Image (tube, rainbow, N blue to C red; front, side, top):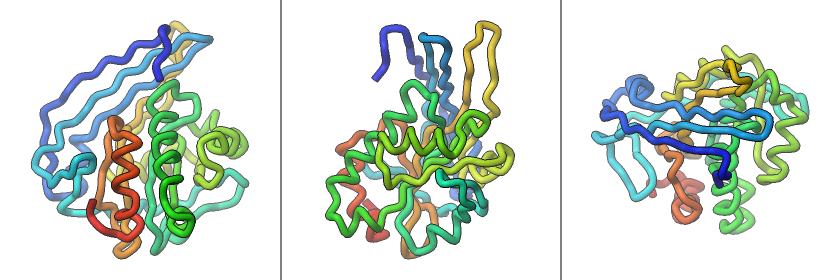
Length: 230
């Protein structure tokens, strides 16, 4: 999903995740997505997650995350209390932005395709939440338009950047304020991980990286809906 005007470079940082959930944050990487007037480029760093239990696609945390305690605004302009609204529901959360040229739409598209493979009843149970890392441009209406093209049932959230950043950090995902470079390119740095929360415990127990495929999600979603390990 990269055009000929873009290039993507990958660097690997040799870091291990400890058992403590907060220590995981230090090992997570930031994906740099940038856009300008027609051309764009992206960089991504992939963290080594050795030291945790792994399935083919997911990293299973030995100390699951507690859900972010934030209240943001959804695509209808209404307040959305993340913990309250997703309590007891299988939930996937991803932090990204609508102007991202590659990683964000690919990730959400993969999840959307995999979700459609679930039985209708299970599709209704699964909550997929996209939280913007670029709230200045990603208004509720803009988020709504973008997510509608992915899956109309996806939940989009925007709000105060510091609130979003703190919520992301609480589950080990780093994000930085969007910045404009000298050439006019707008860059957003954000962790590219998807975190899955169990409907049984409301804890975030699975991590998926940016290289997770439709096949991977299709295989794992039925178990995530039930709160099981893939």
